[in-house]
Length: 276
Image (cartoon, rainbow, N blue to C red):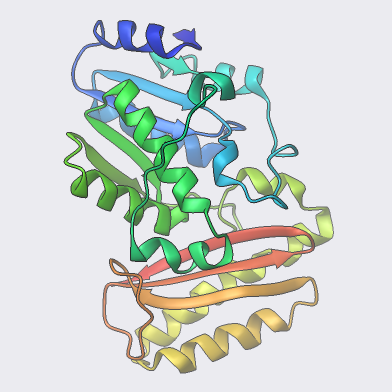
């Protein structure tokens, strides 16, 4: 495994990799969810590249960029056996002085996470477009936990004729259902217990759907009532939307994306489930 920091060296080494090339972009502080993406990339490609870059442009002014968890040595130890190249550029390498370009996808970025975090997806699409240009992967792997991000990246790749396949992989969960996330480390033991209500509300939606309920407002209402029973939980949004357009639904028709953002204490967590 080679660890490189410069774009020029990444491009040079890219020419030596065996095709096809799988790529997993991350912000580091890896967990089993990230590693499931890396393993799928390993299974489906001759070469694997993983990037570790905490991207400042996708964090809002009051968000946790400086405090975002980092543990580079641990990350590299986890990747050693399954990765050919780890690309770890600095902020100055990715955004040199005078950098003034953006990649922006349209309407779907203004919904859900985009409505709560203005400018977030502009930062995501810009850095991912740069990484795609640098790494030139055959396939790129993203987690279903960040469902809106995956939809947006797929649209960007299609709209801009990027020569790669965007693969969405299943969410990896803790035993109580909580989606694995680097931000779970912010939770104290009481908050960690309370966070299980997020998955509980998704399971409730799935149960109502399975029982034949198709009224989206009724399902949202029951999910809201369940979460509000947890005193440490504060709902940002609960959505039942078309899984591709992300437009809110009145009647639940598959595939429907049930998604939410909930604060547990000071930690904002997201999760989702597709009804199909």
